[in-house]
Structures are given as C-alpha cells and as structure tokens.
Length: 115
Image (tube, rainbow, N blue to C red):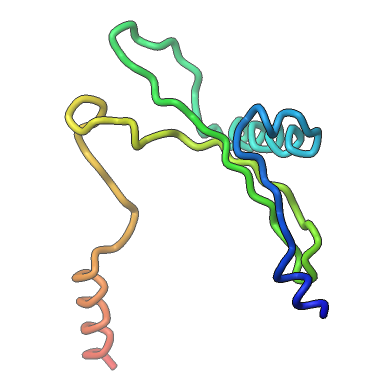
C-alpha cells in the first residue's frame, strides 16, 4: 500500500512567480537561488545599451522528494528565456559543450585499437 500511495502523491508546484511568492517556503528557495547566482558570479549587472533588447527570465520550481515520498528540498531556478533570441540579431554563434558523435566514435575506435 505504501508504494501505491507514493506513486499517487500529488505534488503541487507553483506555475508562476506570483503564485510562488505567496508562500514563504518558495520565497526561501528563490532567495537561495539568488544567493548562489551572486556567489558563483553567474551574472554581472550592467546598464542596458539603449539600442539593445534584454532577455527575459523565468522562475522554474521543483519539489525534490526522498525515496519515501516526503519532501527533501524545494528548488527554484532562475532561467533565461534564450528561446526569445533571434540568430543574427541577438547572437551570431552557438556552442554546446557536448562531444559530437563522430568524435566519440573515433575515441572508442582508438581505444579498441590500443587494447
């Protein structure tokens, strides 16, 4: 019965900043995120150039659970709305820190050859 209850546990997470801000526990999670952003020097506040648009941000909320279904931690993440940017206008290059498939294949082949 315990597993059934855990599987059917309903977790209600905020859909918006306004909804989250009403609850102290989510405000605390948002404050922790801001502190970590400042500690890690993730961003630097600068004056916006008059001829440039800004990228918006959005809060994303997640409840982390223990194996028994109890709440372990509430996480709030502040994410940039990068999808609103336009190639050639807002940026010119893209980069993903992920190895290409042909590079991985070459490394595996080299490792197999050296074995």
